[in-house]
Length: 268
Ligand SMILES: Nc1ncnc2c1ncn2[C@@H]1O[C@H](COP(=O)(O)OP(=O)(O)OP(=O)(O)O)[C@@H](O)[C@H]1O
Image (cartoon, rainbow, N blue to C red; front, side):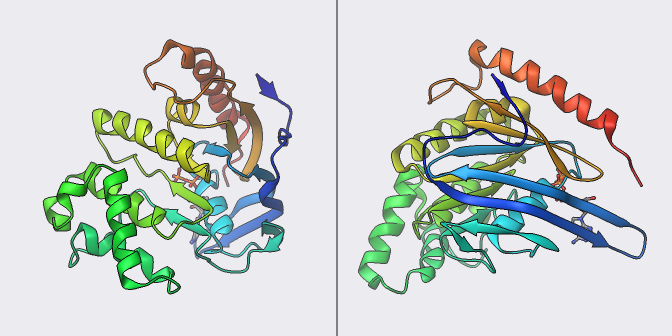
């Protein structure tokens, strides 16, 4: 089940190619090599989970894929084109939903659709309704953000990210702040949505079981400096149940490897 570094080969065409990316941050206190020669190819329609200890560069790598942060050297290609800034084909969803509190659920999803000036107002309204329904919130169309639970906010954020129809969804610990029951439901939902749309998803998490439940591949990163240390292919059919015993073997293998990444780290 474990594949050799740096990555497995898949038959689908490459959607994202990260090539020899280096990124260093310098503050008044320290210099951190957040990413050190990171290369990764994500195939079209793939669900890739990035996992690793705190500070190993997961969010930095995701931001560089999104075009929100530029690498010091190396490059990212999306569909063979250089990523030199954010674009509507690669949208990011964060841990905190970052919804606009002055808009209702529908208004927040409509806001995401500003990225689609090619659509008419009526088309945008239909699409916003469709995605609110897809995430199970059709009855909360006019609920304001403060009236929504944490899980509902993340559902609205998911609908807002999906509505402009990006080809790539970049998710940075989107479910980390939620209770276990809500998270379990969202694992089912995100798999259903991914299976229906076959979008390319890169998903950052701290949670090994979550990574095994969702990913076609789990990319393990190690800190100081941030590198890809191992890649695991999860050869189980989707949809997967987070509580299934089938996940246990992969989970314990990856959890052991995750512990190992801390042993070799050099903290400056
Ligand atoms: N804007 C920044 N300025 C200075 N240092 C930064 C900045 N962004 C990230 N870093 C540093 O780069 C390293 C990688 O950070 P990053 O947030 O990518 O890690 P992570 O694996 O996502 O961590 P976590 O799991 O805790 O969210 C860390 O040491 C962090 O302190």
